[in-house]
Length: 219
Length: 258
Image 1: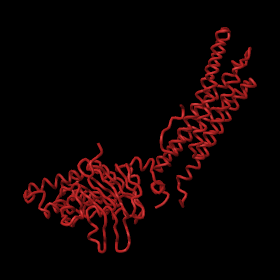
Image 2: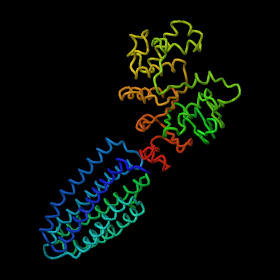
Image 3: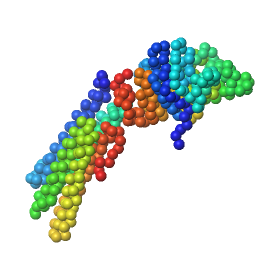
């Protein structure tokens, strides 16, 4: 293919935008993890504020895609890439929201007594962060197999979530006075479980972009 | 139920002298649908179009092998009536080419020389009806009803092209072949013709050659992509534009060559 088209240049910009967005979301999750481990309320506040930048990137990317569609009339893989970019950005934005949920829980978990389940939350968030990086890499490499491998990482998050729910139910029965704080464990774990699902959706967008078909990687 | 096949082409080869312009082309063209033929200049799409009503017979040194069936009968069969074939399968050209006569006479020309659709055509009233119906179907009647007996060459380019479509419709064809019918027209006229095609496909089978990818995407039901005389890909339009099977199709429709 001899010539670089206008679309090729747009693609490079979109790739940069998505890389930027993915990096920020990953940083947000990592920062929320650290805030959780170190019970650092200031760091947690930074995560909450950092979400605005993620949202702004998503909106800017959506606008860019709209202009490309309106002016370039893209077809075939070009148009699928644009749709996939939108889906990637939407799901990354949602993943970023869940980093905020994790940060917001820090205050509750800072109270006594400490919950050992926080370690499970940390493992879930670590997996989620790795998935975000993997999904963006798969997008940039146009690699559906890599996307499938990343989506498979969600099983670990789901496993942690299930185990945590069991443990917390026991905890609530045995120490009803801790039920309110324990409920925060449940909801936070639920958010991190959703984070994994959103990155899985992003992986599905990569498969769709390259292979032109819809797959369900969330099984 | 799959749509009925109007024209069936198999293993079609065509040479201009020693130059092969079509290579083993095969396609079933569905009845009452719009098929768009796309591809870079010289790829064979117009040659293919002209083969369907044997317009290529008029060119010196053309040799054809293979099968083209219209409603199940070979158009190359000995004794096939070429005049009748061209009446059934009409052609609209790139540049509007009205005859230097009135709007009315342009449309009435075919029925008069064919003596069709029946002897009643000789009857003035019947001819009036054919002209009116044809102009109506070509979405031109409203614009020219007060100037039917004025020169056709006084119409705008877009009106002239719709007049040429009306002229073809007047002989009651079944298939319309169109060779880049809007490439000489402005966007408004192009849009009128495209809307017209949507209407016409309810009654007619349409095959259109176009260099305008968006037009192919907008109006057609199926797309055939030609390259170096081969029909590289022939599939429903949404498949070709959303997920083409052949990398060459993808490159061409994405504007990466041609």
